[in-house]
Image (cartoon, rainbow over all chains, first blue to last red; front, side, top):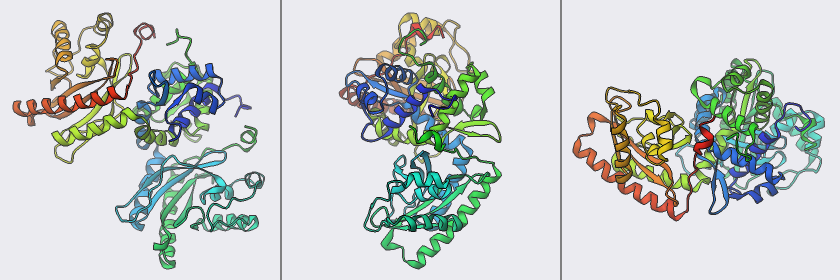
Length: 271
Length: 271
């Protein structure tokens, strides 16, 4: 990013600080902690924090000397779902696929060069249901959804992400690189991915990709359920339903000429 | 703000842009519209927007050339309620007072020198229920909740806000300045305010103030209902319940040593 002329360093700091304060472990942090952990010069960090505070984007308690996310962020958050056409549309399809399958449905998006995140979810009342932590971020190679990103980037970038090989996350994680790369071609062709306990024990995640009108990947719709409750026939049904719903969702997104943000390879790896 | 040394201009622009994109009328805006309406130099505005876009804080559609709020803001918003202790606590009291009264309960906070905003709300299933638009902002003198702010600022600042007199918003709005000022003393003493159709036809708003441990006003809990359904006895009951719940909420906030943000008078009026 720092190589582009369209860049405001203190806005980048502001974004990083807000993201930092959104994490559970650092939800209440001092200036020193924030500036140290985000590697931001202390006086620049203070200027950014004070400006965010004056806009209710962060809350400061002078007794504890700690900053937290501020109330205005909560209000902005409520407005995204109303104002961002494509999120509103995807959320409708999440709701539909959740009702059709009885599983928790989620939207997963790439949020940085090497991470995907749960953006929103729908749950049924059917028990046992799995719940997803909206806002949780995962490295591309440590969650099944990351495969969709790697299936859609250049070979050069894919190799960069895979440069340290594959980590064994559960006893079911397959760490053979060539088989992983073969799977990327396969899922791109069929637009469906079933991941049984590969990254979380007892959890099956079935996902399908959303594309913008230029063919860029916009995100993934995921269904998550308890593996032992999903037999082969049910898995087949879930795949069919998810593919059909994702197809219709993609048609909507293309009509709206939605465009995905691309994470530039050249700039990000130098960070 | 620009007079203080703890200030990052481009972060202030970023905040203003996000707030601007959160409004219904300007939820999808071009660079030209944003830069013109917020009076930000176009190239500075573009740098801020591009940095926000790279963090998924705004979404850009190159086909329509329009910016909207981005998906990451939605995620941050969900985290505020979990991470900000005082909002979580107030929301619990909103839920309680909503259940006890059968009316919609809301948290109202001052969000800028001259505006208050609905921050969150709870609704019962009882019909007819009034719904509040979280994120809607009102000038201090055009909504009953603004009285709480004016009751708690210096006489100098109060006179500044009242310098153009009082606007007649409904046929019930009282515009006599001296009576208005007398009411400010009265509500501060009793910590309850009943406003019958004074700012919205057929709507009664009953509110009570939340204070931090230093005695600064932190916000207001408001109950809103249909005026014709609230007779004198019911109004009395609602006041008693709201005062009791607000008292307990204030005790919690004081124990937590919550601190309100003060909107500096000297800096804001020169904006």
